Image (cartoon, rainbow, N blue to C red; front, side):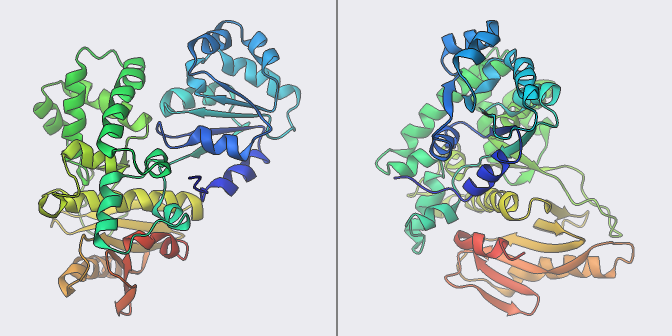
Length: 401
């Protein structure tokens, strides 16, 4: 089943506006499949093949002669020596757009080479896993509780929805083995892969929580510098993201630590041992839902509102709002609740925090309202300033922010 990606038009537009397009994203998010579909006339070459990567590294001029433009190079981070020669080739026809499209699943390594050689010549796009909106457009339903649970525990990697007969546990077991063996070994000199797997699970337990590197290091039994380096690898390979706290002066002391989130709910569930049969009783279900909502917000923010920013709010009184959507001096407060039927208490913290901003004369931000993201069958507004929306229909909500 081919699923049309919401981000397709953005990718095509950028490819026609820059000499080079760089597409990053975690492994198995569908980068190659999407690009080959959108740019079928491009010469395609993958540096995942060691002999091809060796040619690009040791004989880049011969490589570029063998594979002419327009050129699509997959996993280009495996041949960093190629970038300098790409720059020379592109500058010969500086105003010819769409000469090269490059992909990579190791963002930090890739972007260092891009910054050194292709600055000002390329556009950068991150491809996340599928959004629920993309699946819904392909005919996947999320109306029943079982369908919603299946979405969270199965996750949103394209291959799992292209072939729904693939067991998700087997997919993630293989994914982790491949990820650790290829990406982690290449980026880090890890003495014990078992320790890194334990580190992954320790991070999973803390998805949706304030990041405390000391606690993670202690639980795994590694040093804090090691823990910090491993966390950087998870970020570089788009497995996790950090959400920064809102720092504007609103007259209160705010926390300074970021929150940690896994970017795919299926991988998170796998690491936590959560499946459709036990999610009802799992103590992690709230964190899984919050992580899912965060990942969906990121996807739609990139697509519809690239100038907007996401934060969270938490002060020393432990008043917390899961997400703050900031755009043009306005804030929208967002709370994620794994419930179908809300209570007045579910919106009380948003009311309190909105009042904090209203009373803070030094704040340059105005609160437009609040959104409670849950499993309600229908969107509704229990008060003038609050909307209750279905988390599986976030695309239609975010598009209007």
